[in-house]
Length: 115
Length: 115
Image 1 (cartoon, rainbow over the protein chains, first blue to last red):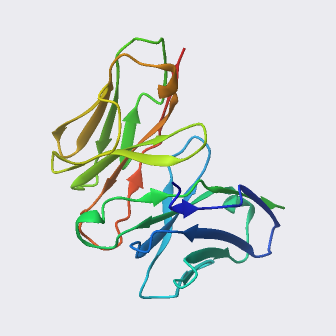
Image 2 (cartoon, rainbow over the protein chains, first blue to last red):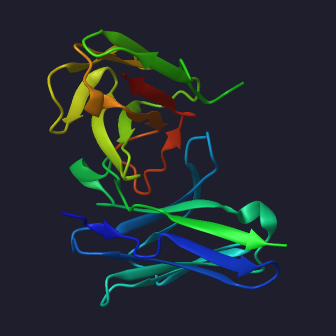
C-alpha cells in the first residue's frame, strides 16, 4: 500500500531548463512534506519541506508546490544544473504529535541534467 | 566531522550468520532510526529510538534487534541472515520527534549482501 507515490522513475532535462518532479499521496493525515536528494553511495540529504498550511515554499533554485485538494506536490528546480543529477525522494509525515517522527517515502525519481 | 556515520559501508556474508551494523551521530539529536532500502528502492522505516527508548517497531522479523547504548548510538544486530535481508540499510537521526518539520539526517548506508 503505497501512501506516497512518485510515478516517474526517471526524468531527463537540459541544463538551464526547469525540472519538475511530481509526488502524489493518499493519506489525508499527512500534513508535512519533505524532499530529499540522494547521490549514489550516499545517504539521502534533506532539500526542502512544506507544511500543509502553505501552498508554496521557495529556497533558492528549489520550489515546492502543494495542492492539498489533489493530494499532489511538486518540486521545481530552476535553472537545472548538472550537479542536480540525483535521485529525489518525496516524503510525508504527520506534522506534529506522536506520529511526527515517522516519514513515509516515495520510490524516488532519478533526475539527469544533461549539459 | 561526519554527522551520521555507519560501519561497515559494505558487508558480504553467508546465510545463517549473525552480523551487526553500527551507527553513531554527533549532532546531539534525541531520535535515531533504521531504514531498509530494498531492491525496489523503497525506503522503509524499521525502528526508531528516542533517548534510548524504542518508539517505532515496524513489522520486522524478530531476527532484527536494535540496540541503543546511548542516545548517540543505534546499532542493528541481525541473527540468522537470509537472502532476503540483502539491501541497503540507512541509519538516520533527528532533533526532536515532536517538532514540526522532522528533518532527518541520514548516514551513508550499509550495503548488506547475503550469499
